[in-house]
Image (cartoon, rainbow, N blue to C red; front, side):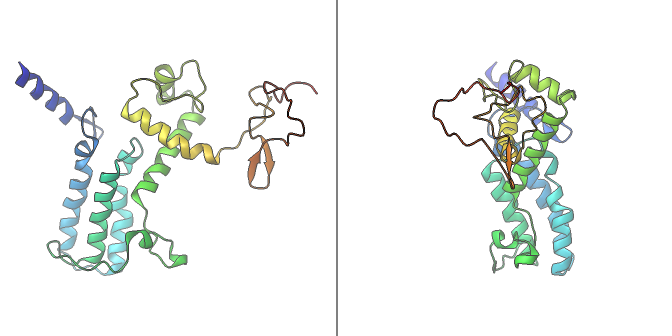
Amino acid sequence: HTAYRRQRQMCIRDRSYLGLPECFSGSKVELLNYIQDKMKGRMSGWYSKFLSQAGKEIILKSVALTMPIHAMSCFRLPKTTCKNLTSAMSAFWWSSHEDKGKVHWLSWDKLCITKEWGGMGFKEIEIFNHALLAKQVWWILSSPTSLLSRFLKNRYFSEKEFLSVPLGSRPSFAWRSILYGRELLVKGLRHMVGDGKSLSVWSTPWLVDGDMMCIPLMKNILVDLNLRVSNPP
């Protein structure tokens, strides 16, 4: 019975939908290894072609970096997975043969610097992953009637605001990833006053000061923290 249950769990974990595993129980690194395997498999064919550095740059930017985009838009890749993908791309950039290593004259971090600053403009996997998740969060926030937004609201924040809802109990891997992207999005959000009913005068940054949002200057330590922008003076 135990062997049957273990085999059944393995079959469930091997299932995929739209290229992503249906079940994320267990090691996330092992479940997402298929991204690295797929990238390395594609690179094996590229090694057989004598490509210039310009050709490698185009392939890395237009093919290799786009392969994990779907997964990175849905889940936060583990640091080990990000490191393995970065290592595979770095090896392809510096090596001419798959089975022969070569000195990496610059770190991948420096190659990810924009060309204007002396780099090659490659994307850092971990930062790129964070940005894609923030974009997903923006879609949830700006499209509340979409199927994804309604599903998440019903499951995680039916009675709370999306931007303030906590992690909660027994969160899924996808929900953890979404809240990770929310951390980045919140840093760049600006509150529109509108009717002012949801904005706290003293705790919500709703005033524009150059490129930043700030709260009013408190001249008196005794203030009404429940005061809303919509309240009459």
